[in-house]
Length: 417
Image 1 (tube, helix red, strand yellow):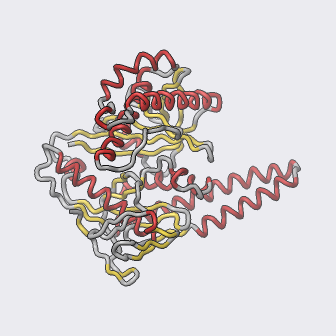
Image 2: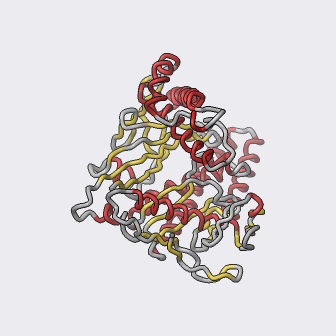
Image 3: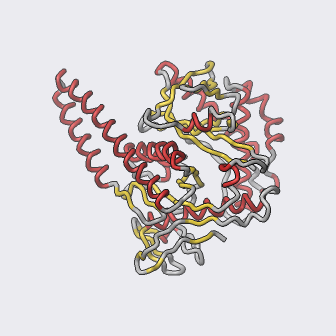
């Protein structure tokens, strides 16, 4: 049985090496798109290449000649294209409209050879040798990389490096895997085949976070103080004096400290919400391409989303709660009623959700939070049922919902079927 854990960390990259990472990402995306061109067949999904060995044998030599990437990064770029093509082929088989995969967002995949972990930093392969990057992590708590990356019980798997242009920050999502034969008394391993209760979390602009239990962390106060800091910065910049410059630096430090403390508080609340409702797992949407999915979000929103996931990721394990991510597709447009599930863009209108099929009305962010929890539950049930070592795979997965009433409808914890 495989148990996977993800630790999200911000990296401090030496200024003189940032260009090396940017150039590496450009060449990585080039390789991934070249591979996608090779794998894609316009005429029929049967002609698409979905075998990694086939694509690698055809492209590896050429891409090594055409780029300065290491062998492992070239292979990971090819693998990304193959996996994306597989996903498109599955949708094509179902009669859905599809198009050739295209990779535009800044990101790179690293395997255990192209990324080497140490206690305080990670060494990453680039087009110009390796770069040593320190972690930026809170100092008041055990960190995920200590629990999983440096643990002898966990094995490093391929992970993703991302860059946020708006904030000029690098983030590394480290994935580790624990392999358990099924014997012994390992609690964490055995828990994966037992009962789990899930807390879904939706992140947004109007509501910074919403849980599947119906708790809202509004973004009004956060946005207000962000505007106040921005207004104050503008006033100081207009003065143009040395004193104003010094004051601007002090303001920047106060603002950063305030932001971190604010997100720390929300993260603590989310973990407490999970504990109070006996949840074993907190589930977020995958934050990849978050700026494309929320085009109206400002840079401080994206910063808050990433920080919140990072803080919850290291705080939750201290309370015996794991943190997972699921694909974000259509969680805002899908009806969360288990007897419906109708998905349509017109179901959502701003903060209001109304299912065109069954008439279910609810806050749109709360609806999305429930869908996130249910998606993880179904994903886990599918994994258990398809595993040859998991028995029947019928271990229940409950999505913790609002036990009261919302818009006149009662919501009790439900079991995924």
